Amino acid sequence: MFKKRFAPFINLNLKNNTIYKKNQFIDLLIHMGMTKDFAENGSKTYKELRGMHNQDADTLLYHLKNYEDSKDLHRMFSTLFEIVWEMARKINLFDIKKHYDVAIDFTEWYFYGDRGAPMVVGKEPERGTSKCYKFATINIVESGKRFTLLALPVGPFDRKEEILRKLLGYVLERIKIRRVYVDRGYCDSYTIKIFNNLHLKYLMPCSQYSTVRDILKITSAPSIITDFEMKDVTFNLVIVEEEDNNGEIVKRAFATNETFEENDVSLTERLFLLYGKRWGIETSYRVKKHSYLPKTTSKNYLIRLFYFMFSVLLYNLWILADILIWLALFGVVKEDHLITSKYFGTVLYTIDPGG
Image (cartoon, rainbow, N blue to C red):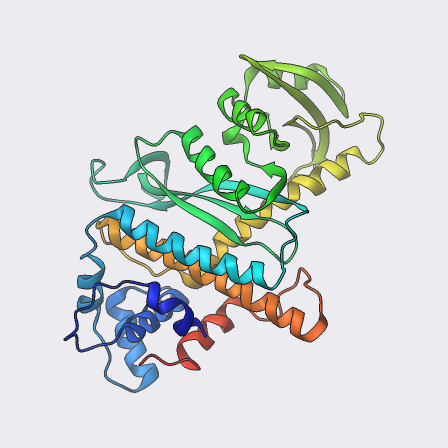
């Protein structure tokens, strides 16, 4: 089903007289992601696994380097994401009358080459580098339905607010949003203006500002400060307590435009339960990186972009397959997965062989 439905839209720059067929390259890419391997070694282990002559790493990388424009490559994967969404919509997985929670986040892919290379951005020093490739994604974070609706490459000249507008605009054309979850890096006036202009509810940590830290020192928890000012915007500042990893009680602050009652005895539990939904996007990143993203030291951005977008596609297909199995067996979709991401990937390139 995967190759029949999606392979025609995956352009690998193959010529009519090429020795290997597209499905063979797709199988190799899946194998590389599943084994977290480089193209060179992945092609060798794949040959041993399948017991057959297969395409080598140089051939695969040659075709991936032949994309002329990263925008064309991104458009190709956007089309593939749209096909997954249409399949989900046709089985009535999402009700257009209902609202759904979404989360937005950035993910980084460490880079060790020239800072001036295309699409390389700066980051906090980590693992021996202060450079990375960056991608922004928006996920549905409802239980059992954590699709990545859109993934965008983020370059050194891309403004965060423009990325947010693109992600939210894309999703609002497809579903109604109940609430947006973002991390503390988004807690600024620009982001809040975008949410307000789109009439979206939001929830995010807000503890990094000096004014907030000062308030935390003198304010008891739980407390709610309405119309808290940040530059030219206002929001509700919700202060609660939790136990940290060291067993100490610490105060946390959240920014939101929703109304909470500080006398609600379950306020803290409710707030962390709500924001806990954002970890769904963290889980999706772990699956993409550990189950479907090949390794590479290539400084060619087109190869990196293809690998990342391909991992997002496989992640979405896994979510869709798991949902279809839930519906077929039980008629409902629950949080637990009936098939693991590894098993799904293995099925893709072993039960559905290339040809």
